Image (cartoon, rainbow, N blue to C red; front, side):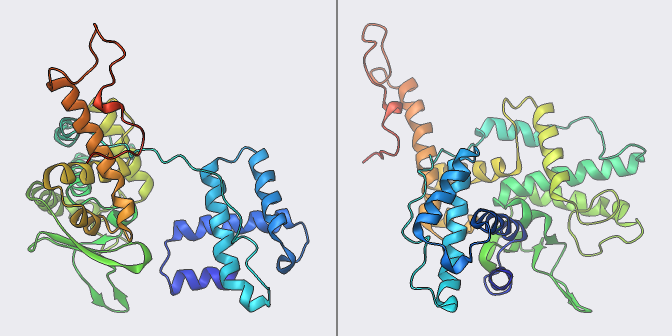
Length: 334
């Protein structure tokens, strides 16, 4: 198992979070096998193990991921162990409802990004200069999130510029002159994403203030976004600061980093109607992953249609009329 995880890390460039999830899933397999050699596990065993996990209250989504982990492990290990077949290959996982991604409206996104919350820092005892620097950093981070549709891990992994010196080489970096970021995403796939003018303005303001946080002892000299102690900002800090800003701005939903990524994809697709371009900017390996935003876009258009068209929506005189927004889930317009 360790060898397989090492292969995924070095050969496939899987993220730390994905590998940690896979390690937990393999732990379930060992625990449920209860001493049975794993090369003796059969399809019947796999089905029974999933039933036991379901009885413990695991969600269909978690069960589907666990099964996928077991299937991937056995696909790699079964030939090496001399097994006749992959015992997880023929097992069907639970049906996972695929909900629409949660995206903010354009007005909500503008309100969030334009909002200036009270300057409360990550810790007490901050100087005025530190509080100001943190506020500029947060604005730059959130503008870049929405401007380029980055993942959270991709954002915190950015360097101020490409660096290759003294045994260190940047994996992802900002190129402010070209108004773009170069990102090493999932699966070790690199992509270059443009950065909008407002995000560039916010980034320049942050870079001017960055030395305030970079002055701390042991500061990370390459990281684009820094925490109070001068280290690369953590994902938890980004999540907490964004949620706080959303609440302060009066956004009627919990705002987490992926909401800005979803909003970026939805709004670009509404304007450009270029699914392939959105796929490239998001770094999706399969366009079917990006296509879910067409459903979100159509849902928005259907609501606008029902409000705007005089004979489209429900009518008080005809309460059984079906508005266009009530199309069956998954059905697409011609």
